[in-house]
Length: 310
Ligand SMILES: [Fe+2]
Image 1 (cartoon, rainbow, N blue to C red):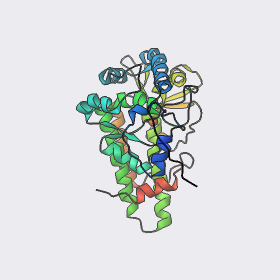
Image 2 (cartoon, rainbow, N blue to C red):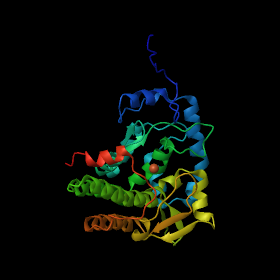
Image 3 (tube, rainbow, N blue to C red):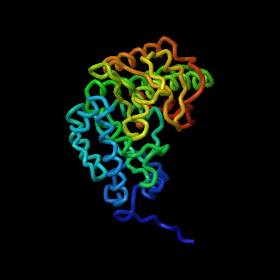
Image 4 (tube, rainbow, N blue to C red):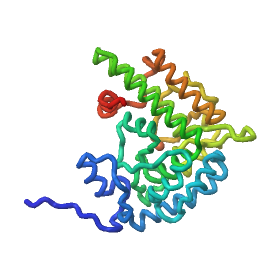
């Protein structure tokens, strides 16, 4: 029987979980790709337009000033899915960061290593127009509208690089362990601490604004129309000044609004905390953090153990 060949044609669509282009690329083992811009459908552009339009007023109300400045510096088109090339033209001169198109999930070490090199692995698919509110997978709205405006801020960008360096230190540390079982056990604990810290800051962080009011800088909140307001307004959300010893031992769940959020004072504060996290790692304090989410897949483990440590 002849094999069916997948053909791509302009406007066929790059909808999350329904994009043949992505499926084919992944089946070939491709992680980094060129953004095939002509494949976006009018429905994809319309989904972007609606997502972007409705969140404007919430960004004005809840987002940190640094984020709003970032949005204006990137000159995103409200009506069309962004071209990564255009985004990078504005972004790279500011902090050296670049959005880099990927086919989907990036194994943990590779993700952090990209940050170390000022590259941000970026999902290029757009969520289905019928589920604008919630999807478990990241999409280009989360990555470009939620994350990338923060990357225009030099101190925030340096903090992401420090996360990458901390992951590099973790890989170097566990490589020295000869006992394989102990090696994996250590790695899982250190990774859990690192991933939790990333989650409660880069993805879901709050910070103090100029007058002491709470503002959002975490991308998971900035890309969610519902949760950005919930994070600031809901009396059910616990909001506490960040404590590293708490965060690294705090598990989280991804499928509902976060009931617990942490507040930093500034990006200098956040940067110093990543330094501290790395120091604790070197001192062995991350070797036995509390069990629970997030888990580490075989692929994630391999990415740490097999990475080339240049
Ligand atoms: Fe994210």
